[in-house]
Length: 627
Image: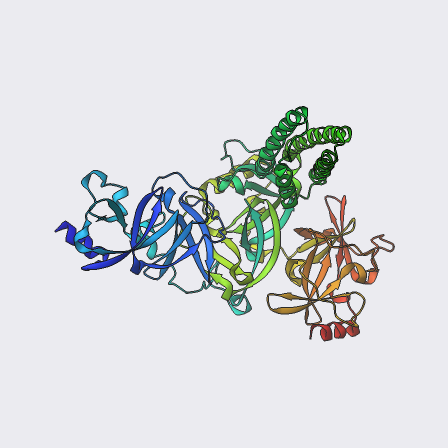
């Protein structure tokens, strides 16, 4: 009777087919009717605070696919990816899940008589996944038939999760936590994207009050370790949260240092081996793969800290010197010039030891200088304002609602849940939307706010308890500040549609000198204006920090090229003065609407009037360029 029940629950008749696969040389199988397709391991985005067996999410032809590592799911040691690694895409009630396996073996026909229920000795947690045991080849081959629905459960029983899920294919009505959007906002959602632990996340712009450079906060006693302390920002108390710690991720400083350390140790060991090889006389070609490993790491490592980049540049130069001297030594040995070969060998060893010393110095410098990369995103919802430290603020985007997907059915333990996933660049770029509302419900964080208010004399709770960015004080103006050379400029955020990285620009014949060309912004042709040329400043080549600020100029969506975007801040109108004569910014006074004074005038921001950047005639020419 038990055997018949198991067969019925598996949907198996007199004969069925199993897709079999291997995990650590053990053979498992799923009913072929539940396996939709088999794919290679796709590019994954890691979701924070998910169960350890969830590898991340991927885009599968427009569907956000959670991927489970089957080895970890079954308590086995995780394996490295190989050419045989595959992902079984399983469909349960219209919900797709990817299951990573060591390799797929075959499709096997199974008779009803060949299936037995799981033996009593393994009943328990593991047996929840087993549908039965299949004996083939007279018992010489054992295949464990799995229950696909049970294997695909993530974090909570499927019945409990189903009530909170969105129907397959249904788009989010609102990816935020403040209710449905209306009007134009129902079609386009503005978000601030940022990097955290090498993945891209975002908050809805409606929750972002400002973006600040990282400062050392005042510590607050008896708070969780992810609370760094509090800052006083223009008279308001701001609790500062380390988002990496909150999501149980290693610090950015450790990530940088840990990326360097194994390479430095490998390089140091290699130099020691070379010293022995050179001492033994002429040898065959030396394995210099470690120099290529260092090259690759350096090319992928970037920082806003000049000190860190100077150390990397120095290490890069020394490594290139080592490579060149190795090549020269090889040539001299081929020619029989032993003396010259020995000189090159000494150069290799000295250059290698210097490289190791600079890399060690880089590791020591990271902790003191990594804050140059980080930013504090000030978010506001549910009557609570918090500063969240992130690795790097990426850009401000307008994302069409059609590109938003509901969050995958992955539960996490603790403060941050996904509210949706944005799919850009034909799905090759996934941005995970974090639910600010869920964070604000964390009682520990509310307690931190309360204790920080009590610990700070003369501060009132009303100073920071605002209902959202939309309720910004009328006596303040919210600015996006950016750099052109050494000067800092600002544009009201209300005039900015989004901020993007500099992409490929196509030149337009006979366009005005300050019109750089046109670019494609998610299918829309945008004219691009070189802000330096427009303001008669010295032309500067683009680099990794160059950004395009998208504004509306005379009804034409236009990109303004700037050197770098610094931050988003709230500036009191009383701190804005009219532009004095001869301000020395290098920009014609006609483009300037005022001078913002920050930190009691120690920091000056030149406020630009977007409407005055182009004359009517120039706006008409810009419109012709766009068309």
